Length: 77
View 1 (cartoon, helix red, strand yellow):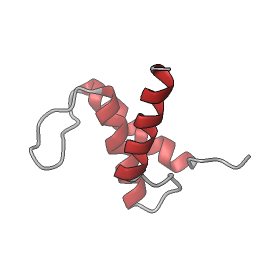
View 2: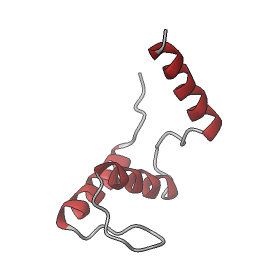
View 3: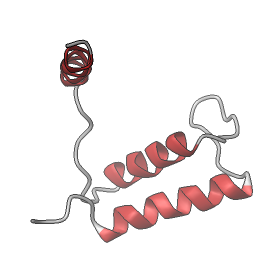
């Protein structure tokens, strides 16, 4: 099975996680300090995508909606 994420994209996420821990990671538009682990990962992956590293494309809104609906159906019977 081929890799989904390149080593370079892993490094980008690793760097953003370190920045978050140091308290120096800032969000794009507002410039607020990022404290969320998930947000830090998202920023790292986004930067890797922009740099042309091997990262799977984001799911479309329709695909996310479809997946959450399937989960709800499974949970309720």
